[in-house]
Image 1 (cartoon, helix red, strand yellow):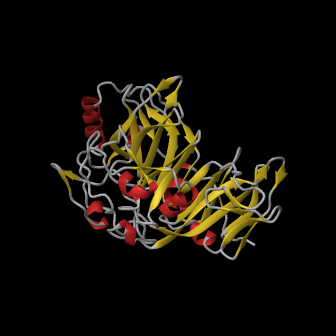
Image 2 (tube, helix red, strand yellow; image 1 turned 180 degrees about the vertical axis):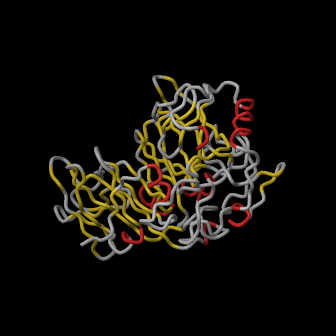
Image 3 (tube, one colour; image 1 turned 45 degrees about the vertical axis):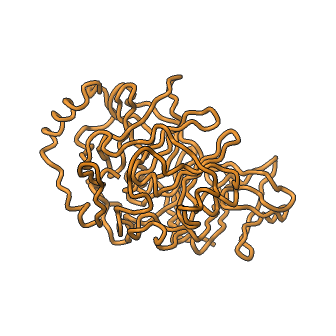
Length: 380
């Protein structure tokens, strides 16, 4: 995220060693004074976290520019530059299906968009592997978001241009300024391969590379960052020793508790059925997506699974799922389902499951914000 460094009009792509060698200038006190000068509209007296927890990530305010006027192309047009295994954030609202390639979000982190008439912010923090979409409307007011250049728990701190309040991307909560204590509504989204999106939504729309900025889309400035032995950038919290920090986990949020599944476990169990807070759910995992944070070229990243959790209740009955010959089927009707929770064959063709809140993140980030989470270590 914020540690991608800008030099004049160009971006220098460097390995993780260079990123970790970036020195944060000045003391916390000096940074606080600088913040007040750079953010005259921000109400620092109104906050829900200590300012000492928020660190400079390198670039200044809007040094990583959000996309405010996104353009979209067809799936066929996107195939000219987007490889099948590359990861995309999928958002489907009010009959509109859109994919936001990580190769573009890597250099912008926020897309202010309108989907099906709903103002949304599609966000990605590379340092936390956090891809989250939000409704941009708060108390009847539509907000536009940009990057502050700051991190908390290694996670992107956004700001809204209307009040210049600061927001934590990982939680969607205002942490400094007028909206401190307020929460954005997270929208169901998933990170899957471009091919899975294209198969599910052949008439869908894909964020265009014509962003108004010149960036090396397709490159990964964080090469090697998601190695299991890597340390998070600018993470000052106490490490949670229950999992390696860069282990990807699927998080599921219930009414009273949270549960996470290491993706290394889900790779061996492409379909899992469990219950949380009275909600029967299924976890679908599918191999074949490129890691965006592995190699210098995203398309060459090692293979990792996509994983999404869904409520198993549909039309008054609880479906039972299983993996058969590489396919996801429900044993109740024999229908076949895709990773996006849609029935693609059988009696339930066209039906969609409700996605559960959560998402796939690095373990260190999820546990920093949700330390009481239950970790699933074995499956039947």
